[in-house]
Length: 101
Image 1: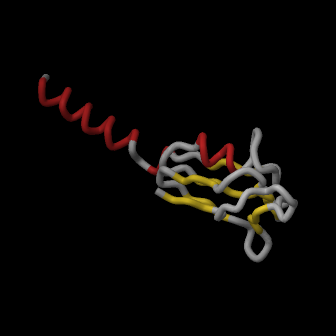
Image 2: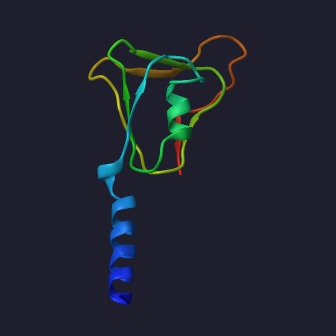
């Protein structure tokens, strides 16, 4: 019985850390923040999740700060279309686009 409990614990650990359970999130707006924005999904995604862009999102304008990536996630843009940049508006603080820890 002890062997089966150990085996079940190991199996549970492998399954819960498996990329098979990873979720795909789709960025639905080009806003700096808010629901379904790139920043929102970077903050709320679980390790191994994937962030993709809806086909109609070509540009994300950042106005507040860099995007901090503190866990292993994948971000896929639309080939030759997706652009992420800092707002050129006056008063926008200087920052880089991504910071990965």
